[in-house]
Image 1 (cartoon, rainbow, N blue to C red):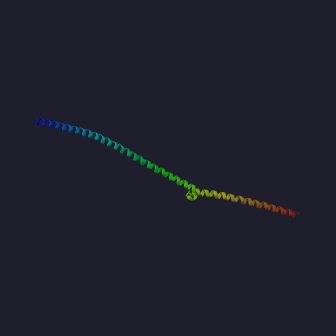
Image 2 (cartoon, rainbow, N blue to C red):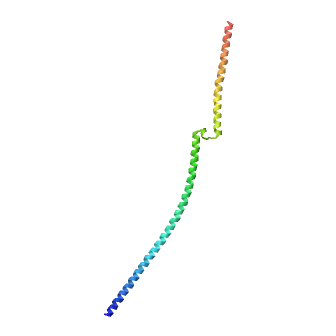
Length: 139
């Protein structure tokens, strides 16, 4: 019986060793697979980080460009607002002086024309009065 016991013991001992070996091999394969997954994940994260940095740089460039465009747009809005509001709103004095001078010239021309017409009328009425005086004196 002792040989049976030693044979069973040796069989169970061999099974235990094989089982432990199989478990070790499985753990080794799982470890290698996990190692590959980790390396792949780390590389993927590095690529994503580089892409993110590039995207941030592009975003900053776009923000700067957008600020420039907004500033130009605001300048144009102010300029258009000044032009629409007229001389009181800040159009240069030279432009407003030129427009005032042209308005004054037009007004003075308009005033002088009726005055000359009135003086012509006065001359004509004086001529008519002298004719009537002469006709009445001749009678």
